[in-house]
Amino acid sequence: MSSPNVSETMKHIEEFAAMADNETRYVRQMDVGQVIRQGDIYVTRLPDGTQLGKETTQRQLAPGSTNGSRHVIDGDTHVFSRNGNALIGPVFRVDGDQCEISHPEHAHVVIFQRGVYGVTYQRDFAQEERTRVND
Image: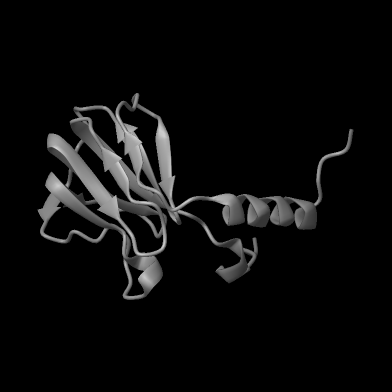
């Protein structure tokens, strides 16, 4: 059996996205390393002893001013900036009974577990500059 080509893979992704619901998703338990997705961000459960970085008042988890970047966290949480690259977002710590990550175009995510979570961003290969390093 051969593996799917790029256009078959893209068609599958588009079909899956069309079937996605925009209902609120409730996350009652996440193990360390487990990931949930909301649009173009991924939230990963991190070990409780993870270095947090510098606390920020920013509640938007993705940079930008477009509707697509409006991943906003609410609840008894603290958000910390991380020094990383363009794919690494902030870390947040849930200190209360729950937090909610809202978005105008995607299902809201409610997390019912205290702990530390890291945000990473989806990589868009089509938008990246293609350069080759010369020896």
